[in-house]
Every structure is written in structure tokens, then in C-alpha cells.
Image (cartoon, rainbow, N blue to C red; front, top):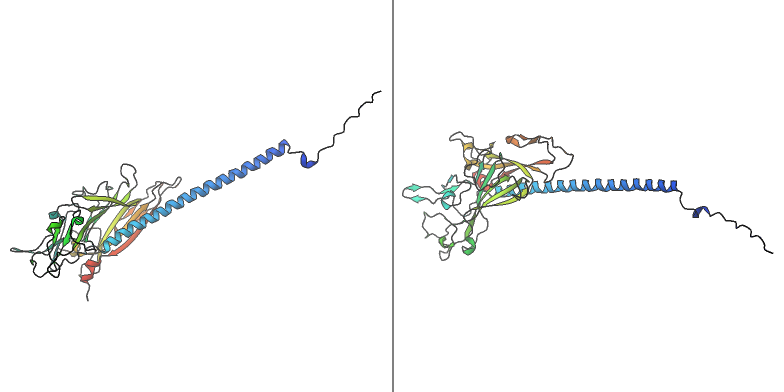
Length: 345
């Protein structure tokens, strides 16, 4: 006799073991997606802020570095070492001249009597000036340039190492010809002026001629980032080097000493044009004020530059209405080697 089986009773699962319902799962996924979206937005904003901060830092560093290089070089403009400047006549020289005859140096002569000549320590190149400036490759249209001339502060022995650039030698020996105030050459064999004991060859100093200008590109042919560049004289050509990328414009104000006391009495963008006037002579420049307009090397999406920037006597720039951020830097430099000897003792 078989007995009928009693149906099994199922024990309800505890609440903690039942899992999620479909509605609960959808709600959880929605909340999770919202949190992830928030984190992604936060990360994106943080990354964009970091990029903008990095661009601003690079812009600040570039602008300040370019201004520092300029002011340092200007502070020693007109340093001609042991070359006696007594009775010297400062003369213009071709900015891009490479031959010794075009550099502005000339020894005095006894018959007929002519004075010793040396080049102006500082000269300006106007915005519209283009003739004879082939060494300023890719110069940005409508921007000025500045020429600085001096000797290197280091003195070295003439030799093979001095043949790559012009050097200047003076004499310390009383038996050397009095009309040879200096020797300017790129050939070590030409340096024959004696030292103080009149037994050895005197040391030489490198002649430095540099032109500062704004170019339309940093690495030309690759980018179009405006850049402060420097053209420097070597043996037979000028070599152009980038100094500070992002420099969009520049202005130079020249402080002329009109009363001979070593201080600037009037600032101008160039010569006054008045014949015989003290402010129409580059030899009377005793200070230079530089205005440098720097911009970021990369655009900022959503930003529009509607500001106006002052470049002193050169006027204003802007609004440009592009996506680059800009900043103006200004510094005034005293030309110590020109202003110093004029000051009253």
C-alpha cells in the first residue's frame, strides 16, 4: 500500500538573499552613471584649468626672459674695453654689415688728420625701415628692431679659436705706433700689438653686434608663433637665434641726453629729425625703455581677446579679437658706458 507524498513546503528566502528587483537595478545604474558623469566633468575641467595655467606660466616665463636678455645686453652697450674713446667720433654703421669696412671702426690718421671712429653703441630700426636689413629673416611687418654693439667682457689670447668672429685688440706698449688705436680682424695673424712689457702679444676681445627683432615664426617653416629673435654677427654673416616665443610686438623708446649730464631728458621712438639737435644724434642715447607684448603660444577655446594694450609712445595694440591671451612687459635700462662718463664727479 502506497502512501501519497505530501507536497514540499518552500521556505521563503530571507530578505537579504532575494537580490535586486529590476527597478532597483535601474535606479542604481542611473545613480552610478550620474556619479561617473560628474567625475568625468570634474576631471575634464581640472585638466583644462591645468592646461590654461601651464600656458599662462609659459607666457610669463617667455616674456620676462626676453625682456631680461634685452635689458642685460643694453646695460653693457658701448663697452669698448681698453679702446681709448678720447676724441672718438661715433658714427653710424650698417646694421647687417659683415665686412670690416662696414662695421663703423676706423683708426685715426696723422696726415691728413682724421679722428678715431667707432660705431654707435645703440641704434634703432624704424617700423617701416627695410633697406639693408636682409639679415633679419622673417621679420614681422610693422615692428621695429634694436641694434646693440659692444665688446665681450672676456679677454682672450689671439689664436685659431678667435677666427670665427671679429675681435678687437689694443696696445699696452709705448713703442707701438701711436696712430694704431686698435686692430679689428677675424684673423689671429693680424693681431700684433704688444702687451705692457712690450714682449708679448696683447689679449683681444670679441666684437659683438646684435640686432633684436620680432619674427613671424619660432621654427620657421614649421610654426607661425611670433618670436623675439636675435641676429648676431659672426665672421661673414649674421646668425639668427630664437630667444622668446610668443612675443607678438615690441616698442623701443630712446632716452636722449640733451644737456650732457648723463640723464635722459626726452624719450623718442627714434631721431627727432632736427639737424644739429642733441636728440637727433644716436650717441646721446643714455637709456632705453622697452615695451614687449607677449601672447600665449596656443589659443584658448572660447576666449576672445578684446583688450587694448599700451606700448608707450608707440601707441596701442588691439583689440585683436582672437583666441590668444596677451600681456605687456615694460622695463627701462640705463646705458652705463654712455651715461656714466657724462655725470658730474
